Image (cartoon, rainbow, N blue to C red; front, side, top):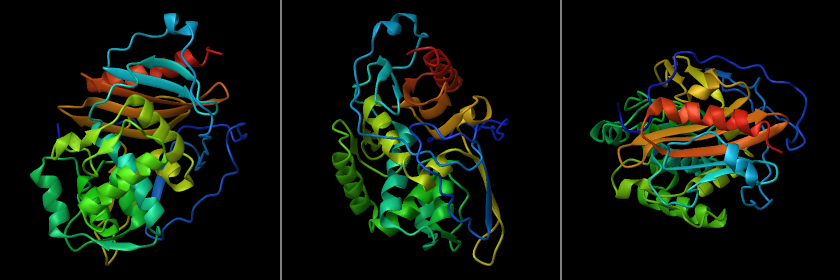
Length: 316
């Protein structure tokens, strides 16, 4: 298995969601599609806005009936209120593998225009190959919009895409990582420190974070309509043009094909981090956001997330 993410599910398919607005969702505005692209989402194109201001509160007595979690750390939060419905070592600092790319995408969206065009270099491709990382199959000389590179970053977890984006918007990896850490401080991620834009083992295992900080980051990230849309996309197709070959990128998040109401967000894997999952789902009129970190089995991070979401549907 390549460093970065687990093998994508073969059962990815769009899930049908109710069109009624949730109390915590803002009005939806669909971003214009690029002329050479198309994608399949798990949510009929809806971009959820997730409130961030409410403080988290301690887990209550319902913890006694929660499903068993084998992962080193886990957290499940009500996105609207910040209430922690389930917590297991949520403040434990550890590598989070490709969950780092959520911050990479978030920083890029603050710096870039979606229509910006980036030319892929040999260094971008070599970076992913040299580290044995998951990649989006980009080739030197191809040119892509930032919008398409964000799909390449988030769906197949392309380290070639992360390198290209950091190179452009640092400019350079070092400056880009400095921006990531500055944004982490701005968002109140007090136990998070990034070392690279992709979560790869070198340097420093990509840095450190916690389940609590990752869930907090997701609450901010899902407020951005484009990032929310990308995170919930099952498959993104880029048609062949004079600027690039045809590409089909599939999401490694198996919840999008198996959990009704799934909204993304990101998978990750390295030996140091174990199998990780940052997830969100709509259930019983609420949006739930959670993290599973340091799981020893790829499939169990998804089954754990499913059980937590289903269990939380009955917790009030």
